[in-house]
Every structure is written in structure tokens, then in C-alpha cells.
Length: 304
Image (cartoon, rainbow, N blue to C red):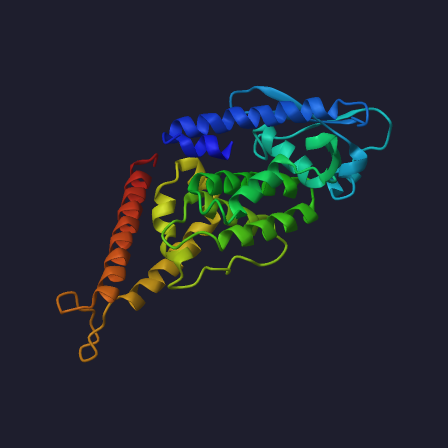
């Protein structure tokens, strides 16, 4: 799948392929869980943004190991349906990824060359996505990283609803690994969405991680924030002010200060390694100012 996305240079087509592939993953899970060796006594009902409902099968015994929510469901032998509110999750693939993260890895036997039987631990589709992003032979791929970050952000919210602390901890570990792979200047809105989603549900205080004046995590945030649509901006609303505050506090440290007057000079001969970061900061500062003025104008033109 990753190769197909890499070959398709049109972002719209790439995401359409991704949606098709995710739909196939959901169908595969439903078919796989209907096999005789699995007990299905739990169904998750997910409603997408278009109102389409999908029932995803699961096993209470397996999920109750890590999910306090499942542990607290009424006892009994009858099947139970859990309707997931649309504010928590709107796509079945997120539920399937969550289930894969909470099911054990299964050993498969495969007929290899020369008629030999080889055993190996089966990888889930989510594990495969993580492996692709972490594969050093492939190198950094922005679309793969975006797909994984978006999945992490969605799974984190569902895991919090399911009271699955172990799943959240694993997502944190995965994110910390992939975060280190993102080159400076290559951060995307999806990376921030994943980071903030984990901040919102993680029991540890991670909000200060990377959020310090002068860090690339802070410096690249304004451009990524402005690239988000309104719904995405609303989703991270609680993190916007701290991030902008950190960015603004970091800007003066990058501007050349006249040691005699104490003012910031813009007309003297400034080395490129100082001038260019300063110009980038000023450009981003201008973007923030424009955004705030636009926001203020819309607020004033609203209902009295």
C-alpha cells in the first residue's frame, strides 16, 4: 500500500487510495473474526460522517484484559452492542486498529519454498504501518508519516474512551520513536494532531515536551496550524495559546540585537546563518498576526 501511495503524486488520489485500503482492512477484520476459532460476543457500532453504520466484531474476554470500560460492561452470555458516539470516533478503521493493538499476536504457518513449513508471528496492519515508517531503508516518507500520525490521534481518543491505559502507553512509545525521525522543516499538521491528542489522554504530563522557545517543534507550529481546517483547529484548541506563546517568546532570541542601543537591527550586515532564521521568524510572526486580526474581525462581525 505504501508503494502505491508513493507512486501516486496527486494527494487527492493518494488519500482516496488510502480510504479504499482502510475499508478493505475493516472488511478483512470482520471476515477474520467470523472464523470458528474466535468468539464474537461484542459488537462496536460506528457511524461515519455520512451516517453509514458499521458493526465491528470483538471478544469481551480479550478486550477486558486492557480495557476497564469492557470490564465494567454488564455480565452475561448474551452479545452486547456498544454504540460509539460520533464525538469519539467516526470511522471503523480506528476501531479495528484499536482491536489489533489489544489482541495477541498470532503464530501462522506458511508453506515456504521447497515445501517447508515456516512459523512466524503475524503482524497486524497497524504494526505494518508503524514498521514502514520506522524502516530506515525506505527513508522519511511524509505521506506514510501523516497516515500513521492521523491514526494515532484517532486511536488515542478511542483508547481514552475505552479506559485502555496500556494502549495509550504503547501509542506514546510509538510516537516518541517516529517523532525523532521527522527532519526539521518537515513537520506537518498531522504530527501536531497526534502529539496533542496524546497529551490530552496521557496520564503523564507531556505537554512541555518539545514546547520550549527556539525548538523546531514550536517554530514550525504556526505554519502547520494555519494549514488546518476549522474542525482540526478546534480539535487542538486547548494547545494553541501555549504554542503561540512559546513561539512569540522565542522570536526575539533569533533577531540580531544592537549591543549599544538594545534595539533589534534589520539594516546592518547580518550573517546569513543569523539573518535567515530571523526572516523566517518574522514571516511566521506576520502569519500569526494576520490570523489573529482575521479572527478578531470575524468575532466583531458576529451576533451582538
